[in-house]
Length: 431
Ligand SMILES: [Zn+2]
Figure 1 (cartoon, rainbow, N blue to C red):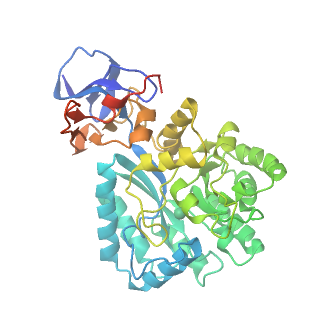
Figure 2 (tube, protein in one colour):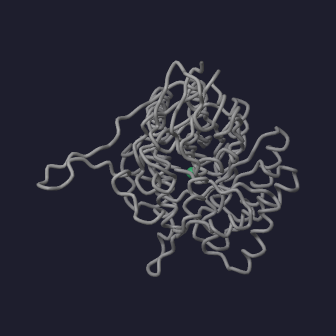
Figure 3 (cartoon, rainbow, N blue to C red):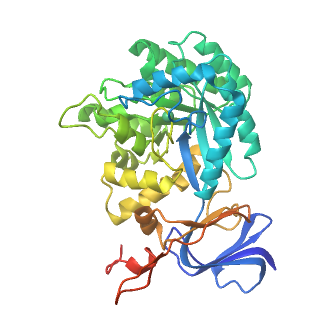
């Protein structure tokens, strides 16, 4: 007798008709036709059952603040940063906590159960940090929330930036952040990367920097980040977020850079929605896409995971906490249209991100955490195409969200009366 059995599941690796039994919040068995009963049984009826979605790059202190105190008129990254600066003095801890918790509710309904959020350390009051440390504790039963100390206005550029970042780490922030391309000079940027890697090494923490989020092909802080990673023995514990300048770099230079990044085991975090929205803003035509070189980095063996970055904040007015929307955009921007490509993109929303965040017990194997999302789709490719309803969201074997399947009724003479968009529109050839 198990606590829970999910029957007739399709798994992300392509296995079908699988039963998953749960005991003590862990997967106790995962195989065909488990001959046992359970307190709760869910029949997945050939739908995809995946480990939860993960967002390795987000800004939970800014989310849902869209329109405060005004909209971003130019739509640029730089106006977004100054807009956030205008909003900052009026932020209160209560409002920050309330918005973050509301976003986490949305995330749970979307099957998004692990988030790495940057938290701005530029305001010496550090109420953003206080608020998100409290939120991290509050959501612990249902979301793994990691926090990155992020000097939005620059580590050296902003007065008091060095001290504030250190205080944020003292307050229990998990990861060292940075923004080298926003420092006043290339030299300051390089020096900030070195200083921040040293702090991470001294404190035994990981690093995750906003790095080279610009169209400038000469923005090469990722090179320094990889070199300092090796110098301080931080291999595998460092993430380069965005890396959009790589899109514009000279190919010969990149042929030298990518092997260096691979040697340093840099985790790469592109943010497709935000990159396609914010990069190439100074171009007329042709207009650059701006997302980093996803395929080339993956081919070189680097771990790539996609982030949502923003939802309804000074930088991005769209977003819904749906990592499949992120993957859908990645497929288009990186032109990853092949069958293997799309499966890889699904991995970059799940298992790759678990590696980036260093999550333990993640996956669909016996002994892993019983954390699942049952989707109204048959497989990862259909999920990316349809961005389907999350029928059941389960954490440690307990149901934490459910939605009714999306089924349209038709009232057309001589035509079907109902449409289940996944089931009724499978392609004639295997996807
Ligand atoms: Zn960001």
